[in-house]
Length: 260
Image 1 (cartoon, one colour):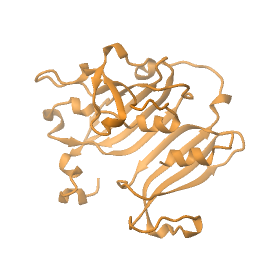
Image 2 (cartoon, one colour):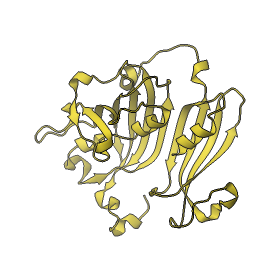
Image 3 (tube, one colour):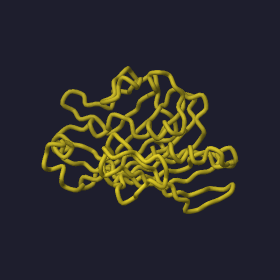
Image 4 (cartoon, rainbow, N blue to C red):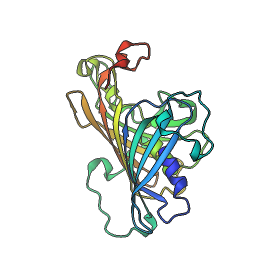
């Protein structure tokens, strides 16, 4: 939602392409009204612009939605996410191209995938996944996900939906068994960074890989790479997450009152 607001804000400016996004998640967002505040930290006529973007929701979700900026009272809102976003013009970027990092070196093979279903919103998503990373019998799998995804209605993939696909996957940690994880676990995101590498053109499906290189004291990184079906690198991602007991994700549990 924050990225969508910025793309609308920059629709008539030279910097129409997101270059990098770094979002910090302060509080869980809820369905309902929201306000996106955009502040330019580094303005530029034609070069890169750096923005501070916050997504706010009213403390009272039943309150009337402002129809004009003069009706907006920041003290009545709670900050849910804080984003630093760089905007630029990829059509003007030229220079050396070289990829070494193994995860981003090439897209996963579609031939190794089979149809699968997302944990939620499955009615809107077509998914094929490489199941070889899943547990086999009593042997744990590996914390990697390789899949091909797209919208079930066939709509094209743009920058806004790339941010969605950067965070839409069956979590790699679920391939590890409970002995390693210490029981049922929830993996809330503290921070998400996306670096956009090229303009999506005529893209209806995304090939993506996500991997957890390590878990240290219940905190972990999750690296990702997204490609189009021609093998062009669209974006790379990094999550910083926590590994917490599943009960922390249960609204009725007193544990949800504890801070992450």
